Image 1 (cartoon, rainbow, N blue to C red):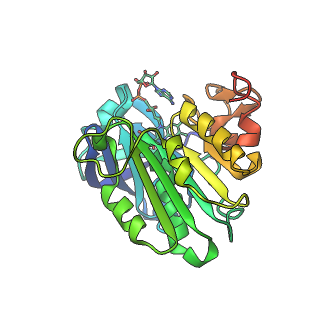
Image 2: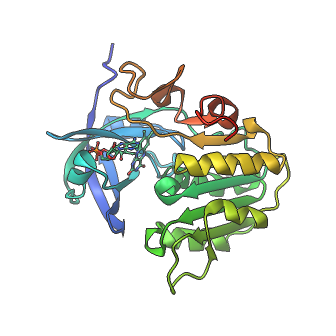
Length: 276
Ligand SMILES: Cc1cc2nc3c(=O)[nH]c(=O)nc-3n(C[C@H](O)[C@H](O)[C@H](O)COP(=O)(O)OP(=O)(O)OC[C@H]3O[C@@H](n4cnc5c(N)ncnc54)[C@H](O)[C@@H]3O)c2cc1C
């Protein structure tokens, strides 16, 4: 039986600086057999290994229909991600995965889709947005709401511009600490909800700081959207990624194997503050 910890070498083929301290790396498995057989779903993550330092879970942001070139957007947070900042094109790193479940792309078919993100939260949903655009006729209106602290925290600027120009798509951006360069809304992401007109049959996919997701989920319930149509991608520290070590245990759930995507119906019972 193959070890669940089996990791494969992958070569960095592109490196892009998104904003200060945030990089997007494109990588390809060195072994052509692995490159051909590797598949993932939008919303899943890989464990990315820096040789001699350690490994961390990172969402896959590229399109699942092109699994040979994997993209990961990484924010420098500490020891392991700090070492990733030094990666150059041509470097070889370790990748194991994919892990976790994906976004509910099947349940979302023929429905209006609302994507809500805060800060780096937009990384895990970039893959599902690309997925929907590739199958645009299968989905209803697409609403993308994104909040950042300051304008320099806005990742994927050119992608937001591209998404805004697409038919049946609305993009709403807000910053709670704007400067003179900011031409969009001011405030936190939930303040955008006054502009959001969607039927109660809409499906919501959310990623970002947990407090933002809690308040957003509550406001969505007020709009008549049911708690099993609101999906959240949760983050917990994890080690094994296969439900063995217990680091990411969330009451009876493991974020690594039962998530990271959960319905709000599931997670609202787990939140410590009742009602939020
Ligand atoms: C399913 C999943 C998907 C993720 N996707 C991405 C992604 O696409 N891009 C990305 O940049 N990061 C992502 N992360 C977060 C990333 O794994 C952590 O930032 C990373 O593990 C930090 O490791 P480090 O050794 O660099 O920092 P450390 O030295 O371990 O920690 C630095 C600081 O960050 C805090 N921290 C570390 N991990 C977490 C965490 N999971 N939750 C809250 N605080 C934490 C520590 O407490 C400490 O304060 C994801 C995490 C999960 C669970």
